[in-house]
Image 1 (cartoon, one colour):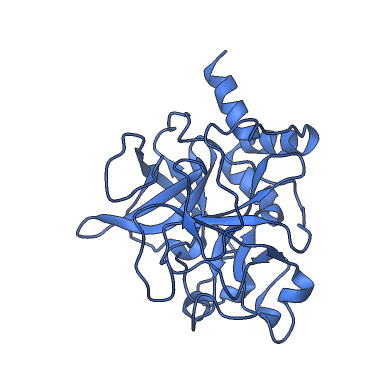
Image 2 (cartoon, helix red, strand yellow):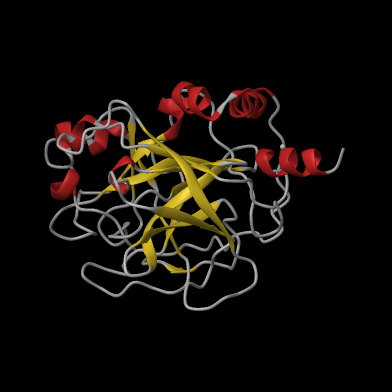
Length: 291
């Protein structure tokens, strides 16, 4: 799978469909959740909020992952965005090597990088950016809105979460055509911030997961950390941020994510009242997903 090195930067029927998707009440294609060690092909469209962010060069090519959090808003990492570059978002993607008929391509109308993000001081955190799409995608079995956690939620140590993305399969390894997923248990802050782990590089606005045998890698940046809630719904608890500059799966250097629950207010301010409504509804009316 893929990531950037720590050294480098270290919503009647249609409305009901949107609400159902945003609450995570049903996944048409439940994810495969066996105890993956080193990652595997994800079940096609089992993470329907996962998007592929492509950048224009000689042609459009994969650059980062992202998460559809509102009909016209995609959440990704701040370090994925460079001034002057032109981006598009591909939703409903699984196999990048072929047209599957489920893809929906949208242009990016507006980019909002977190005001406190600083590429020269990655350890300060705030590695977030929001992309506003030119028009909403069609919600279906392959494209759905993610659930975001309640403001301030902290996951217990060992919580089972899954990273997903098209990043390198291992350090300096090939980039896969098919969306990958890997099991990354949460490493609590008191452990991840130890001096022989990430130390002061890990802030409380971040979340660590995995480490050693399995991790994110270059190309997974900006993608989601998917965690199963106690109510049976999947929540995007993190945005893939960084790994070790030496190797992707270094011992005591878990993959580090920007913790979405630490930025609920900023996300709602930027993406308009619809997201704030969903965040409150998620917190107040938990329901069980049919997986």
